[in-house]
Length: 125
Image 1 (tube, rainbow, N blue to C red):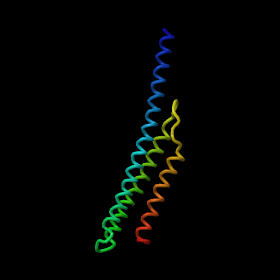
Image 2 (image 1 turned 90 degrees about the vertical axis):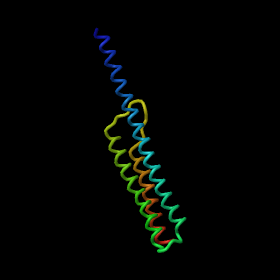
Image 3 (image 1 turned 120 degrees about the vertical axis):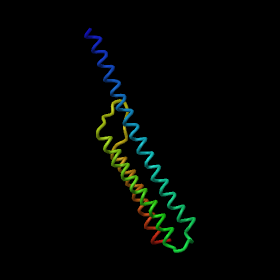
Image 4 (image 1 turned 60 degrees about the horizontal axis):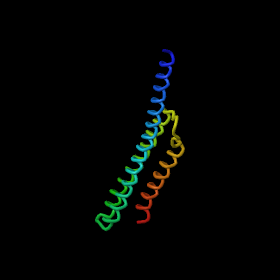
């Protein structure tokens, strides 16, 4: 009976390990989804500024575009915080998860690029 109990315990531990691996991968997919949403908000802001740039008063399309791009910065910041918080609670077993540094670098690159776009819209256009 002990062999059977040990076997069941090993199977239960294996299922738990696999569930944790799936959760880590789902966390990465969720971060990627929010990063795509942030990039879409940047695209909407740029497109709005390009399409309605000749509108009067001239600051209105810039302000609306800036709101979308600033929303993108907020989205990527919150996605990074959430992804890192979840990743810190998980231990992967069979999969190699994305390092927290990579998540932070992606978020920093998107956020910095978006901030440069806001500055460019107001200073160069």
